[in-house]
Length: 174
Image (tube, one colour):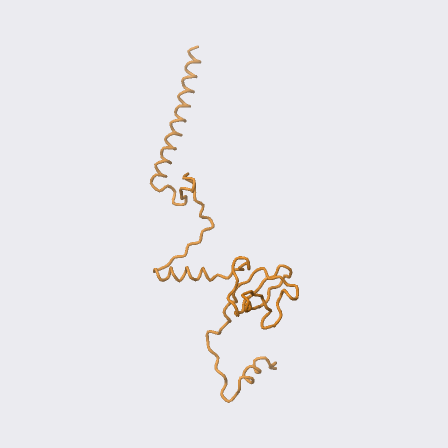
């Protein structure tokens, strides 16, 4: 019986040591979290008032040197091209835009025109008929990008007109 008591006592002490080690480890982790924790782990209080882990895996950080840079970055982000559903917003009248259709796969360049009665319609380019009149249903639009401009301004060759200047660029040279 004394051997069984000694063995039980040794096992109890071993289990007690394990528990103390776990408590110490948890205590260290709690202290670390109180003082900022792991720099890779962030916590926030959600809308229900409960602390939660913040996952920043897909965050993008834009570093700005000044308040002006920050304003410029915000404006640039607002200008990102995206499809705008016609149910959300209509384009400015008489400006060229890119349109998408419910019933056709390719986008097209169009204008949005407002009639005298205040109603509006989408027209292909500069045409006088609407997309609706030919069975196309515009579902979204986006502004056109700015046209490409070479960084180095090209000069016309002296004594040549614009036709000769551009014709020379497309003729086959052998």
